[in-house]
Image 1 (cartoon, rainbow, N blue to C red):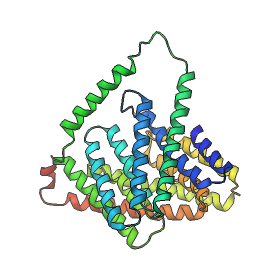
Image 2: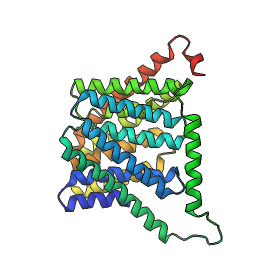
Image 3: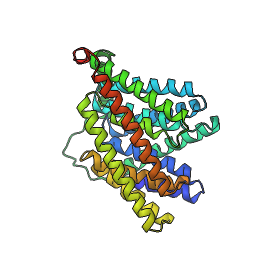
Amino acid sequence: MGTVALALLIGYLVGHEAAGAIAAGAAYTIGFAVFHETLASRMLSMAMVTLGIGSATLAGSIAADWTWVVLLVIALAAVNFGLLTSISATAGWIGQQCAIYVIVASYFPRGLHFALGRSAMVLLGGALQMITYALTDLFQHRNAADPVTPLRVRFPARIRELWLKLRDEAHLTGATASYTIRLAITLLLSTAIYRHFHVRNGYWSPMTALLVLKPHWPATLSRGIARFLGTLTGAGVALVLAHSVTFNTPVIFALVLVCAWGCYALQAVNYAVFSMFTTLYIVFLFHFGGFSQTSAAHIRLFNTALGGAIALVMDGCWKLLPGRAAKEA
């Protein structure tokens, strides 16, 4: 949370609030990596995710000028996510974050200079989060009686473990193939729709579809309902606040931090409440990008409903295909 505040503050002080918001968003994402130790240490895990979302941002930003290239990189992101999901929940989370950053970046066709600048802000946000975590960890009290295996031993062992999982489990067969195909079609469809109709901030549609669609229908249905209800509640709260509270920069700043804290605290508790806080966080964060709270709330609600509906319809239709259950077993 402190890193999110620092990124926003730096952007505000230097007169580049939108850049600060991009860095803050990346710092917010990397903050979740502490719950996912994918390598031999959390720092290595955070570094890997930072490089992943930074490169995804660059790829999406460069592709943004051409719809067919956007569809290609999003299809690749879907396959990457589907394969990583078959390895572990943590690997799937990394693939999911990379796909999200590809989707978001591909909405902004502003040339190579902007692509490099946006990617740099993402990397900066991740680096700030890593530095903050390292400093906190350095001053944290440690129990000297607990032995810690040296990193030089843990790292090669963890790399070997991940490689074996990748080799043995990441195959486009059975349920993995089914989920990856559904995901790719859903993301391509939602992306093509928003780009064809020039939906404002339409990237929220495929991003919602990505987050809602799960390997099994009951999970997709419950996830979709929870996300829609959470987004609806969050948008409603934002609209009420927009009509009853005067929003100056310090107030917005505080609300962003409160909502970020809510997201971290509730991410593993209740998905609907987490979605509500996520919606509020994004709505208030968008203030630094020049959006009013009312406009951001309406746009997010529409695109969330569209993306969630596409995911549910796609998954429901796939479930009805003859013999599908037997093939995925």
